[in-house]
Amino acid sequence: MAKFNGIKIVSKVEIKDKNALAIVYTPGVAASCLKIKENPDSSFDYTNRENSVAVISFDYSKSLERSIFLKSVLGIDAYPFEISSQNPQKIKLVVDNIEPSFAAIDLSLISENVQDIEFEAKIPILKGKVENLKQFFLCVSKNLFMFKFEDLEGNVSEKSLQLRKMAGGVIETELTEEKHVKPVGIVSDGSAVLGLGDIGGLAGLSVMEGKAVLFQELGDVSAMPLCLKTQKSEEIIEIVLLLQNSFSGINLEDIKAPRCFEVEEKLIAQADIPIFHDDQHGTAIVVLAALLNALHLASKKIDEVKIVFSGAGAAAIAVCKLILRAGAKNIIMFDIDGAVYKERKQNNFAHDEIAEKTNLKNFKGDLREGIKNADVFIGLSAPDLLDENMIKSMNKNAIVFALANPTPEIMPDIAKKYGAFISASGRSDFPNQINNSLIFPGLFNGVIKNNIKKITNEMKINCAFALASMVKDEELSPDYIIPDALDRQVPIVISNGIN
Image (cartoon, rainbow, N blue to C red; front, side, top):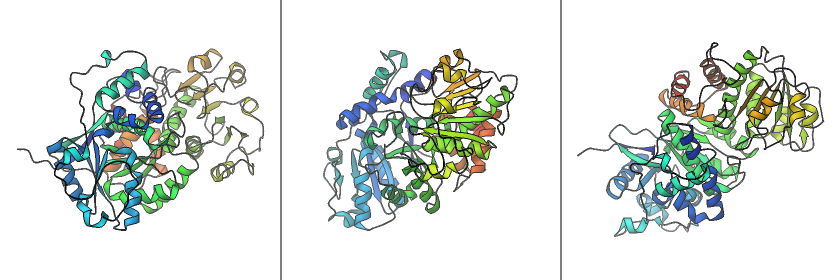
């Protein structure tokens, strides 16, 4: 009989093409998020939550052993955790706030420490021995056999709902004989989810499962969703620090700005594992890579062009910072309150910081006025903000990256119709899809492989240049400035560039 030494998180489906990607991740995943937001109990239908149990102890190896037992004997997808404190209040903080990801929590390995704690979580919490574990946890495992994406019916959203309900989400655990590698933790509070805004950690679970699929399918990285109930910065930070020995790294996801800046900064300073906010830095790396190729094709230089941003949230500010590091000098950012400039009353601390390096002429108008004579537009904001006249007011050989998801600031074909030389979006149904999935699977593969504890700006820029270089000069065209999101060579190139 095989001796199992580890657990990895795997996909229930194979991502072979962009149709599958759209159903498993964006834009299809939004449908199940909205269903769960409307009815929280449906999280047990549309995700793998119904079969997911957190096993918590003070020793990771013991939690792993217990998790292997639960999977091998009961078929439960159990996830091992080590908590670094025996303080009852800290244990309570963790247990109450990881509830959105699990159907039950197993504390039997630390039973003596938790008997008197009154948890607020509404799921079963095992504090000691019971006669029937299966009945206590009430977990249900669903699997797909002989599944074909072609059998799903309806539009992308309807197909996505069918898939998730049929399969019980899109991830599960798998026992391995190889040495266990701790997973990447995909940590989210659900405050800025993929075009849906603040829907909460539970409703965001479908997105984090989709993200875990991409980690595994594209980067051979085991990654687990950890959706939190709390949206308080200090509690998110503390929970991650208490559980950090359970992970090989942390991918922060869908956390609202400016909260995400504080969470990331403090975790980088205090954690012993790599911290990466993908909404910020994954986006920044891909956008820079695409911009380098677009500028080359348009015969323009990064230090000479006028770049206009729509959006001044987490992703936009991170993109702006990385582009500045790459040599850009003339950038103006816009948000719902107009141009971002020094001492603007609507600024938060992140706006004040970026205003020191952008909008050097202190322009105070709106986007319609500011986009005039721009060479590059980068949108990370909201749908349908650009029109014909705005595109026509840009300089010749204009570059338009309209990246709002799922509906961009202007549809790519419309932007080209009105005169854009190069148009890109976050959508898989148009050329030049600028997608984070080109970065995070390979980046974390390289980080884990090389035992790297901190992801630096130099690494991010190196990744951008490596990604850009994958499109050869003879291949480069207005409709091909960035590799395909499902190009299996991309994670390998990115991983090999991390050292």
